[in-house]
Length: 130
Image 1: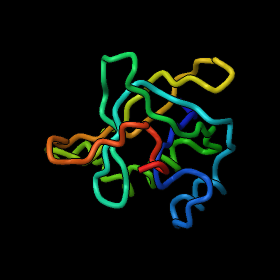
Image 2: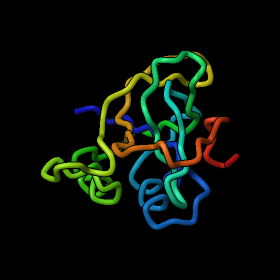
Image 3: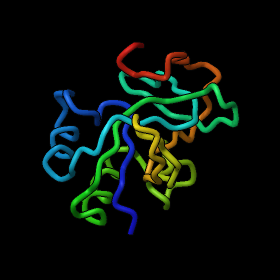
Image 4: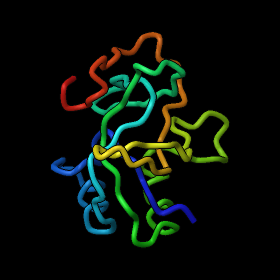
């Protein structure tokens, strides 16, 4: 099973959120990373939407989950990623991500699955710069 996870919002290091703390205890930080996509402010958290435009980049962090199956069950619940729901808020997909040194890896990524027309785009691709 894929053990890498790319996060770009409230699960990143430094956030004082129970799920961010859980991730820091159950995963190893690999490094700063980025993937192709657009970032939107959903509420107090972001949503990544896939994009085919090369200039659309979302910045975040790459982790290696120590127990991916158990961790992903918990994270799926937190992210509203339920395959049994007709329209879950997020879909978990494997996407290519690029580390700062140029290394490309594949990682689970939560992709926003709702309309974004009325949401504010975070043009920088960095949640902390919203």
